Image 1 (cartoon, rainbow, N blue to C red):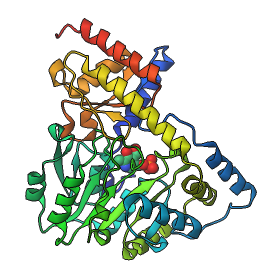
Image 2 (cartoon, protein in one colour; image 1 turned 90 degrees about the horizontal axis):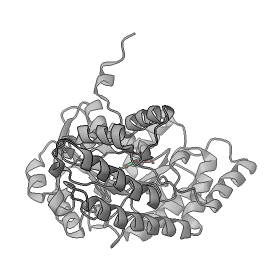
Image 3 (cartoon, protein in one colour; image 1 turned 90 degrees about the vertical axis):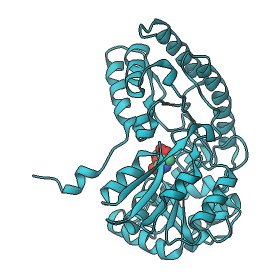
Length: 390
Ligand SMILES: Cc1ncc(COP(=O)(O)O)c(C=O)c1O
């Protein structure tokens, strides 16, 4: 049986491939430090787990309304209004099974052949995968290391066209940890204000930042009705396996996403939604401790990377990634990522797993213990010292 033609245009995520290879090496007795996967290494806070268990005991085991439980939509509206400095009600909220469906459904609802979609490169690989899957035209914009991995705004201005249907922003950013400065967000809003396009603002790392809270473009006057805020529970509350995310968007788009949900999932699991209410309305101390630990790791790990011959690593403003420039080693990204896995026992990702402009970089996730991160730097140092190419 032949698969539908569109399946030849859909992509996957490099992190899962590298994890599979690392597992094979481990089965052969090798010791691998895992810095490839982008999920917090913390447990879901206890009170959230208890709320999920209680919900099961209390019979929250049936279908929920497709756009989400009313109490959760309200809790999300309150949370997003407070954290973004905007005023939104529950009618603008759509609850879905994870952050990814909030890329999948709005793009399915909006994007078609002939449309152009602008997105960051390097960037989360699902953006490009979905653009190609939908037969639209990918318009990658290279991120600029010297600008903390934000766009060159002149390049963005040049790439905007009458065909631009969607502009994807992601701050804090995967894979670089970059945060788009507030001034850039305002400048981007000015550029697109009078254009007939939507913005997908991927804010899945919204709670994991180390300086000022990143500005959401939805908060710039006049932008709320042009913006889909993507957020969720995976990263902020260490709930990747619970599969719960949400979007805040104009009501006409909530309606479209609801139709797609009716045709695919019916609803997000009901008892996990009850746990989501506990996450947003309960104590936030677990998240604060997690972010504090990510900061401690970032400082030590980036300092370690900067001590390596041929590495140069800026200080990420958010998320839990380091994205060093490795051009000084003489290696290409993919070859170095492979060699570090095979020879040094450190699993990381080539920058090119996130697009062609990721060449010259590696992505390390700091979702591993402080000790393991320091040990990984030691292993890379020994590898580079023994590297005959130098
Ligand atoms: C930038 C970005 N957006 C969205 C997601 C998807 O999150 P979820 O695991 O909740 O589907 C991820 C996960 O790694 C991500 O890095």
